[in-house]
Image 1: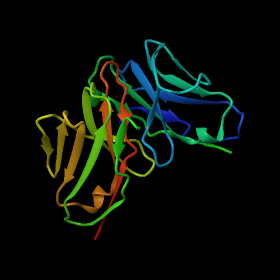
Image 2 (image 1 turned 90 degrees about the vertical axis):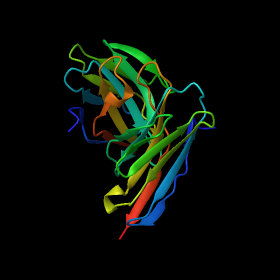
Image 3 (image 1 turned 180 degrees about the vertical axis):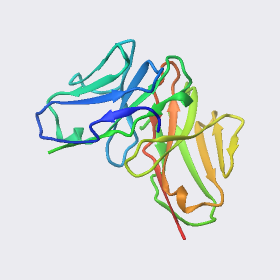
Length: 114
Length: 110
């Protein structure tokens, strides 16, 4: 509906493993942000990518890393998974400098860490 | 202290009721303010932006008080379809970083 697609929709991993989540931004959008939403909480900003570089980061450890590709799609990588990493991971895209009203979220990846 | 605080609810109201949600934020330099709606474990969707002058969109009215760092949302004539979690959101400006409250859950019953 928003044109932002995320994959996979659901994922189960075990503690200590690594995971890669993917996001395709809406056509024409060159900025991608990632958010983590734990159960019962609001989404928390992880980081943002613009022109393939990280542009702003929230309070997340270095084992959370990302990439943005020339086509503006993005990946979120999490190493050494912990139980507390279980959450809904949301990707949002926008054009650079767009007002916040023009931020579009994907439907998310539900990650469960056992 | 959390940057954005909301009453978690739940608010259980009958159809047709008027319900009000409140939110406070800690960063006085915040630039933009929003209410988002989120259905169960789906993506948040923008409900409305909030302006100092107050703004209305149909049954929804939002107010911002910068001096008190307080944001409100009023829903009139509640519908069953209004049942959702309402997220208060603040942006500090600059790049598009959004700071979300934990959300207030609304359940509208027949």
